[in-house]
Image 1 (cartoon, rainbow, N blue to C red):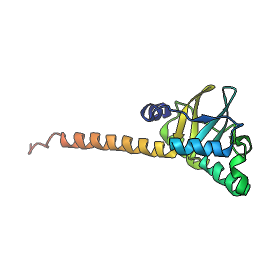
Image 2: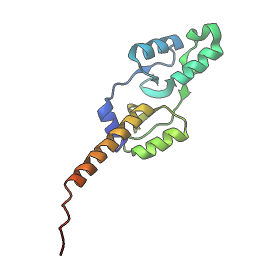
Image 3: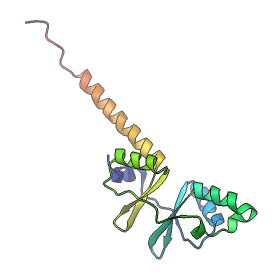
Image 4: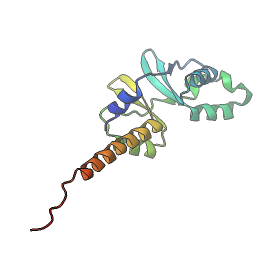
Length: 149
């Protein structure tokens, strides 16, 4: 299974924000849309990624003034990304090795979507369930052994 297949099932709704917005703006979007990440765009180009991890770090460091902190100071700049042809096993390994819960998917310079570790886990479970059903059907339809020769 490839990343593009996960995106096709998940849908490609993207939630973006500008780097000049504040953490309060980001938290409002993340809560209203029930998402754990936002892609930061500037002049039509992905310049960063904001996840709840960065929000919590900034809130902890900023104290009472956390909500006014500009995203440009807390976002992950030029984040790593996956390609649409990446296989799920490679994607899983990549996300685990780099301790990433959210990963943008880029096709050249075009953002195709964001894959979460939850999306990956769901895709793997669905793929395993399909394989399991196919194996059970194969076993059920296995020709009975003949009684003797």
